[in-house]
Image 1: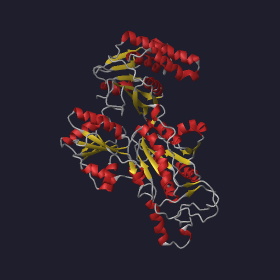
Image 2 (image 1 turned 45 degrees about the vertical axis):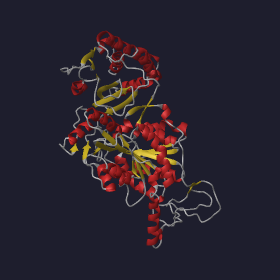
Image 3 (image 1 turned 60 degrees about the vertical axis):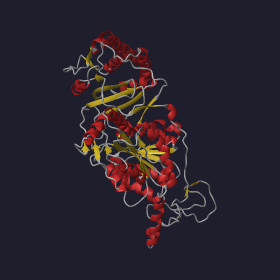
Image 4 (image 1 turned 90 degrees about the vertical axis):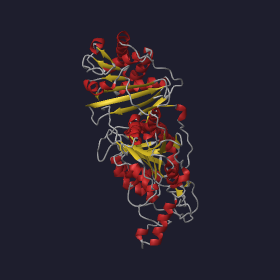
Length: 591
């Protein structure tokens, strides 16, 4: 793939408890400080110790949009990793392993680089092999050892100088051994220029909330959303944010409504199972017209499902959250930076429309780690609180739910002089009188339902519609939503190499939905294929329900692992050849 001259992928495999995160974090830091771009994906199991883990780090001298298709270097921390992944390293690749405990199989063309860890370290600490291998990797990549030494000193500084010295010493032993015994890669890791930063999608969402002015965050830990809670808890004191870990998601969802009612921007995050418990509260926020943000980081369901795997299976759950007709905003960012930038936009929108907002992420975005240009992170975005009354005034018969032309009623902070009102989950009149406590006047009920509905009539104008990326006269138009954006982008490059021109329509705003605009684009396309991480094609059904448009083909993946670019390209080629109209890619790399 012609992304850049340097496009390198490294896989680190082992079992939970072998310390895979540490070398991954250290290499990520080295990469971004050199100004190179990074995308990582960690395939792990729902187990504290044992179970196979495989971390992929893709490094490129240009912006990178997925963890890619290939492996150039494999680090085997146990025999299981060798058995699973050795066959995916071809000519020009390297397989690095502890020769004391791991036995390679028949080579598929990659160089086998065994390291006698025990001889080099004289240590019984099983985690020390990671540091030895880091030294060897730095050698193979043509990086000066001082770069790794600086990173180790930073990483282990809190554990004392003795720990730092020990790690530097064994890393040096691995570096020197590789220098003497292994051939480095032909193309050494370059300097990319301006240093970059690295973050996860969950960190980006949390930072975006902080930038939006969030002052209250509540959560019950649930993977893969827990990283948002971790960032909020770590930074709450410095940022003036109240953070609460609550006993369950029902408590969480109601606490954020209470906080939002007082005028504080409030949010919470969970995964599909937790969001299922929150849905009655989401409807309550809709009835009470309180702006609050809920985040659903999707994982493979239903029920407990596969807790540490990714999927796009919660779309209809979000669309149908709570009972009855009520207004909400739903958005699915494309990547970590987009998620960061979307958070202030979402809060502004919920404040303007006085309704709940739901951001849909997934494990791929939220738990992946990515390079980012620090200058692209704006911690001071524009803030629009909508028609929020903050100044007291003499008693004037305040109507909290005034029947306005726009359906939006000026909202007062509780306790504000001259603005007495009731806020409850029952239907109400304009002045907040509960109509279920009197004769239920059908005219009042109809008036209030229509008033709330009018809020969404002009909502499309408040958000940008999706636009085609690529040539307008393409052979194939690929439609995706949320996290498939980057992988589809790279699949389009693969298709170009195979003689098929493709473009992409990436949908971000689910509600409000630019149905007419999207329909006009797709009806003019030659062949439309929808790509999504779900079995039933939830977005395809939603698109058809909103526009009447039925796609010509589908590419779906629901094995818990995300798309790789070639999965999409292969599916398109199948369908262009009229072999099938629905492609389900096979996951070649066993993770």
